[in-house]
Image 1 (cartoon, rainbow, N blue to C red):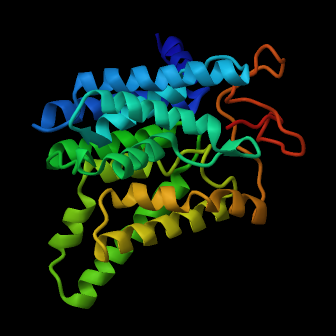
Image 2: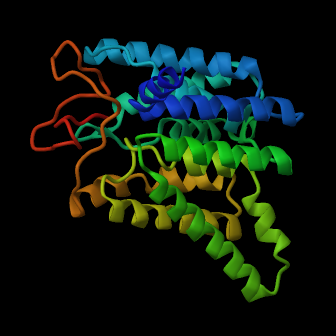
Length: 298
């Protein structure tokens, strides 16, 4: 029994996306059962249909094997974070999110986090008909959510805890520093930090290995930049969906930092090097080596 459990954990850990899917599924259930205006199964079905449709079409166009995991992660993130007036909007968000993953790329790496850009585009196009959930889940569910997200990131092979801590640490320091400077009660920054939306963003969006810098130094610079712009969006113009808008606006920093501070590119899972085994997530690119296998993927 113990050996079977160990092998099961090893099988899940072969691809960091398995942990993300498990954790996001748990957060989706927390949102469904703890808030009156939380995620709904119909939202997930709609987002899943759009994301999978775009993944299938993209795979057909670029002639690669169909890869469902990225689309599933994107669908769960859209369902947890996005709210809209019509169910078809989640389908459109899923299509946009995965479609731009295929369309907007630099040296084999997509520029934008799929769920982030899907929500941002929908907010910009449809205005007040689409918004980001406040994500206030209550104290106990929120603590459980942070624990679940942290465990998933620590256990996964993505090893992106540095960028998560870099973002939340910088963001919290700015909020608390401002409160101290102005003499505001600490309850204000505590409230700003207490949301399920911030949790999902910190652990499952800004940590995406395929749209963030390859080097640790680059990731920390990127995290601090996104946190600073997020804080400014909140303090200054009071921009809706501030973390997502900041991440989308600064995504262009990733190829710049990859060029200035080069490092081995992250690889999802363990795949064969054969042509038949390659997917859109495991393409090879001349002149770049990824950790352990010489493969690089979007």
